Length: 93
Image (cartoon, rainbow, N blue to C red):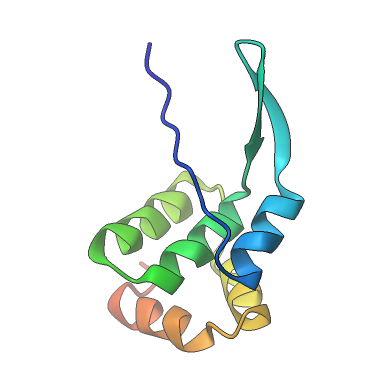
């Protein structure tokens, strides 16, 4: 079985915070850091490609994060405009 893994480099205050708050999990005896859904969503917003928007939608649809959580974290990191662009393209259903 393959595991879906993505490495997130720390390149901003947002990604540094994501890593600081990440939980440690065990994968076959190997410890790894797991970034929370809200941080993943806001990191995706900050990049802004179509596949990043798809990731945000998937996180929302899975119930892993809520729109208010994303908005709050986006505001803390100066990304309200990115969140508003996303909401303009993908309004609540």
